[in-house]
Each structure stands twice: as structure tokens, then as C-alpha cells.
Length: 151
Ligand code: RTP
Image (cartoon, rainbow, N blue to C red; front, side, top):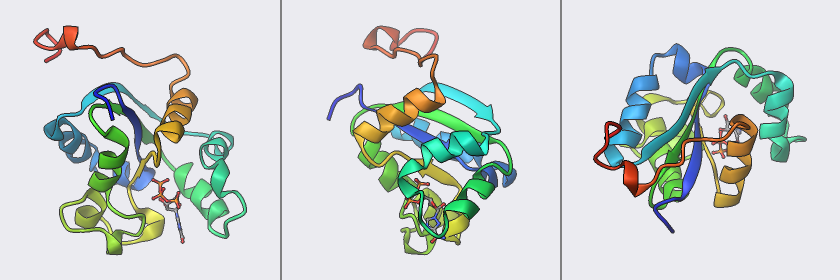
């Protein structure tokens, strides 16, 4: 675990349509994570198939790709202590009905097929996902930036 651990968090099309972008960003900022990359984009099915390559073959895969390509998503990289595991705890369980109240899914959604956000499940997948969604790289956040205009 290090202060430079990074995770890829994505607000899915339903989260964007329901105007939850600010609330989700606020939770990560308030917890103490640093936002080191941010963009909004409408992903192609081909790009999403790469992101969800591990799920190819699952019965819900075609519907998942269609849903994820149906509107813009907000792509983010957050950095800080235990970002991957704590990021997943903050999102809640894949099935919102199994997510504790206080988690993002536990507070804002009900259906597994419309669970408003994605978070990397390991440090290795985080690095792969960051490279896939931000091929030009991200901000290098160092303690030298603390106390600067960025803080
Ligand atoms: P995510 O990648 O979106 O953070 O989700 P996850 O790791 O918690 O769950 P994963 O098993 O990787 O599933 C990816 C996304 O597929 C949709 N899903 N639908 N209909 C279903 O039974 C079903 N199961 C999964 C969800 O949108 C899930 O987040």
C-alpha cells in the first residue's frame, strides 16, 4: 500500500444521466484521494470490449456493452493510500441491493445492470485500465504539489 497507488473509477452512462457526477467526485475528494485524470467520453463498443475483456462469454456481456456505449461516461484516476481496495468499498458491491447504505451504490441505485459506477478490482487491472482510457498519461501527483494552487 502506498500513497501513489492509483485506481480507475468510471461513472457509467446511468450515473451521468442521473446527474450523480458531482456527488461521486465529492466522495473521493472528501475521503482524501487526489484526482489525477478526468475526462468525459462516449466509448465505442470496441473500446468497451477491451475494458471488459475478462467478461467476454458471460450471458450479460452483450447487454453490458450496449448499456456502457449508450451515453457518455466520466473516466477518472484517483490516487492515494489503498486507492484500489478502498475505492471498491466506497462503490459498494456489484449488486446494489447487497451494497451497504453509505456506499455509492447502496445510496444511489438498485439494479446490477444499472449500477452507476466502475472501480478497478486490483492494482494490476487499475494500471491496465489507466493505460487503456488515458493512453497519453495522467498528472504525476507528488507531495511537491501539496500547498500549491492545486490544493
Ligand atoms: P465493475 O467492473 O463495473 O466495477 O463491476 P464489478 O467488478 O463489480 O463486477 P463485474 O463482475 O466485473 O461486472 C461488470 C459489470 O457487469 C454488469 N453485470 N451485470 N446482469 C448481471 O447479472 C450482471 N452482472 C454484472 C454490472 O454493470 C457490473 O458492474
